[in-house]
Length: 257
Image 1 (cartoon, rainbow, N blue to C red):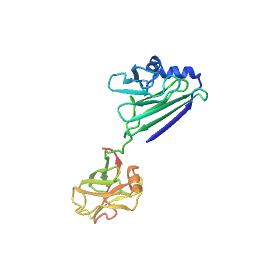
Image 2 (image 1 turned 135 degrees about the vertical axis):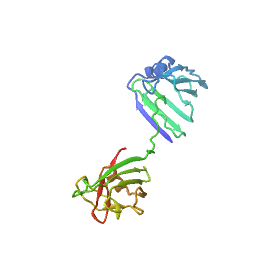
Image 3 (image 1 turned 180 degrees about the vertical axis):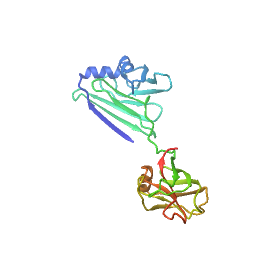
Image 4 (image 1 turned 120 degrees about the horizontal axis):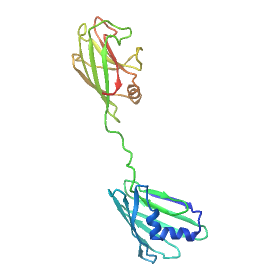
């Protein structure tokens, strides 16, 4: 990837040149964040001269060695800079335009951090480089408590039960385990219903396949919309019997253990 950044520095070119090339200025200002500092810097303004520096975390946990080759010299400068991954930078000071142009070529899966300090110098480092965003890997735990009181309308029953479920990110695979006891008779049906909040009835969204003896286990792949409703607390589990065909034990599914 090629990243090009440019800025006009509102300062005399001599001051900018000194800030960019003075080892003391480099050590004073070359940090990617407040928890970093540059411990070593050297500048040899001759064609082929070396321009090494080292940036470290102040707690001493990590550090990066930068090196450079000066290919033009003192009046103008083209500097090839690199550290632990292939990277090059070309700095071109133009006295009339007072513009500093920097190009960074990166062939590494992690991005380098580029910090532009207006009126001073350009610094580039990675002490506090944030990790690349990654998709979540942990499944979301879901639970429900089943009872006749939660039915709409409520049902008088000794039935009670629990739902333990999880939703896998990315694949939207819902897996479940349902345990119960005290039904008036064998379960004749079991379903996930939605979308509905507590006190509302809704259609079946995921039928639960037999066998329906406790514990009931199973899985299903949800659509993105179904997953969103489930995580929003808009699904419930319902167990049906002959005596209570509309449902004898129900529980609202919610995120959490």
